[in-house]
Image: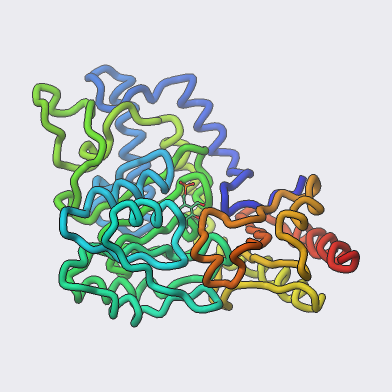
Length: 371
Ligand SMILES: Cc1ncc(COP(=O)(O)O)c(C=O)c1O
């Protein structure tokens, strides 16, 4: 099967990731911070090494302010639910994933800023949506549906000068674009570990510029301040309640080291070239509609004629793993004009090849010809 669903999770990982996961599962990296024995200290060292590595990638000066989570969804929930207090208003965008939209809708006092037909949000519209009680702007860096990139730098500078917190959802850009936490003025940065960073499933994280910006939404055993019934207010313990998955976190560090060695920008460029190759060829077919803007990551979304997106994905399976439907982003589909139908998404990863893209183009061509 040709795997073209890297926006969901990366299938192929660097060999060092599998090795580390096995080594740490079998030989140590035990419960970090739970005792002074050698294995616990080794686990703690693995977490610190992973923090340092992720900090280098996102150009974060305080690695201790990075907490590891199960995925980006947990990180986004911790950020949104943890920063909002009674009376606060929150801004999100149509291009956001349900991991942002659902907690925001549950919060109640929110504004969803519209995107254009190419899936791009105008930062001016975000600025206009700011109210005196706006506490947080949450925005995805790149759409998981069509790959369109948002102007995160401009949104971040609007947030900073307005005194509003900025939460960047880097689930789709971590590992394939430069994400500079300082330059983008992010206060909170959520990332998946298992997508472009090529860590194991069940990894992700949240960077918090200042621990005092949020309250933990889950409390419990952190291994620190054990004589107290109060949750520590320092990072990462504040957000590390319960046993963390040290073998997976250690393996995630290896995925990030691969990205650092090969360059996120260079990996992203290769993925984008493959997406652009597919887009150009699909557009040439005449009956295929492609969505998204030119400023994109290596993800493309399309529909063939009037066929339902699921029918196209079904016709592509079992040779290709692609994703049809709504991709947990219903409002993005509204913006793109694909509500009621969804779209077929193909997403490239660090190990994708041009030959795979070519095979996909040939297969779509046959479907489009059949109609
Ligand atoms: C933009 C975006 N945000 C958040 C998520 C949630 O990520 P995770 O699967 O790591 O929870 C995804 C997953 O596809 C995503 O694409």
